[in-house]
Amino acid sequence: MLLGMEFVAREIRFYTLFEAVYLKTPSEAAEQLASTLIQTYGSRLRYLASAYTYYRKYTIGMSHNVPLSPLYRVVANF
Image (tube, rainbow, N blue to C red):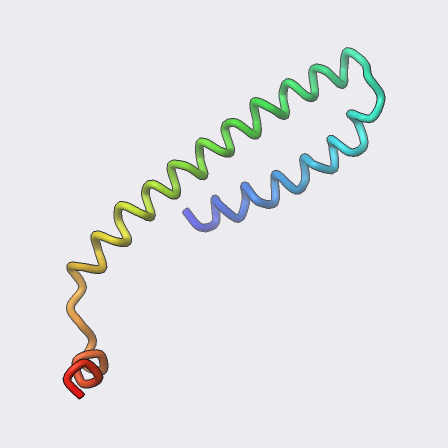
């Protein structure tokens, strides 16, 4: 999942270059590209939202089930 998040970050950076280069001058192709980029950004945001939900749900829940490390018990009892 983390690799997927890194991919999304790189992809967004890549597409900002498209915006800077190809969306400067108005044209029908630029409008189609803008529409496609909006759909792409939307799908990437949905992925990031689902990754956030997954990590929030499973990492918090798993931390309660993990036994405490011996070092933590020593420090806590000190």
